[in-house]
Image (cartoon, rainbow, N blue to C red; front, top):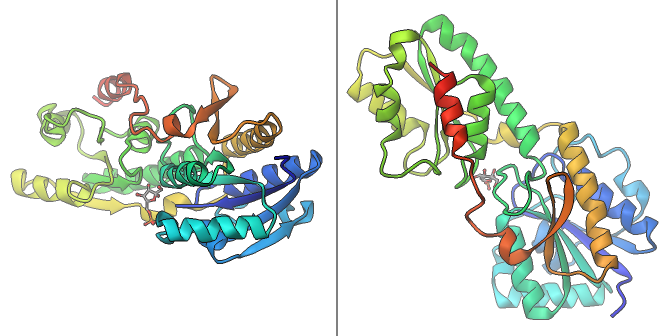
Amino acid sequence: MKIKTIGVLTSGGDAPGMNAAIRAVTRAGISNGFKIKGIFRGYDGLINNEIKDFTTENVSGIINRGGTILRTARSSEFETPEGRKKAYENMRSNNIDALVVIGGNGSLTGAKIFAEEYDVCCIGLPGTIDNDLYGTDSTIGYDTTLNTIVECVDRIRDTAVSHERIFFVEVMGRDAGFLAQNSAIASGAEAAIIPEDSTDVDQLARFMERGIRKSKRSCIVIVSESPKCGALYYADRVHKEFPDYNVRVSILGHLQRGGSPSAHDRILASRTGVGAIEAIMQGQRNLMVGVRNNEIVYVPFLDAIRSDKPFDKKLITVLDELSI
Ligand code: F6P
């Protein structure tokens, strides 16, 4: 089937650079003779027929804007066969032949299931602050969020030093420690507590044993979010185990997802958006477009959503050696 019309949607948690990706898909698509349709509110919009023709003007002035002009959602209906059937029927009735999905792990898992079930062309772009998609060095939004965290930690450092406190700063990342480990290195934090570090090691005990307060009167520990062992859990333990320490917690939360995308994320979004249209023209389908070693790569969905994206354990040594 010749692809004439491409639908584009953003799904899951918004990430800075998603707008740059929407712009790139729209403009590269139109430049190459495709019709583009914007689908609002992620997969929910496909199910509820919230679809609009896009021209180049629809994506004017958005490359610098955070969030997503298409809005986004975590669709529970799309997880059901009935929901996907409605989505497929709306694709057909809107003459959409291919779908570009900009989102993270859950969104690309949805695209994979949909593509298998209905034999439609789906192309993914890695849109998530978590950087947890396999096969691409970075994801759209990760670099901006990393910089946002570093800016926040720089500010927290001022008050931590002034009061001589230990701060536990909790950052996002779902089940991945890329944001925590790299923001700790970049902000000169004293430690990071991340899911990738060995689970049989008590990371807090190891940190305290290093005698951090012998050389420093204040310190910052970046903690990866976790339902059970987040920043509050570690602060509570320090309260109980080292009552003379002055401890505070700062949970950065959703401010990490907002803001104007960095140049790196705008370029990544632009390159992968153009790559998505090229993939469609080459007859490729059901893969994510990424960038590895500065080259565009096409990663099958099955690989992209693997949960074991390599984490460079040497980063743990870098932080340990530099935080004495
Ligand atoms: O996947 C992006 C992310 O920001 C994660 O880091 C975080 O765990 C989650 O989304 C938060 O989701 P929500 O905004 O739905 O609470």
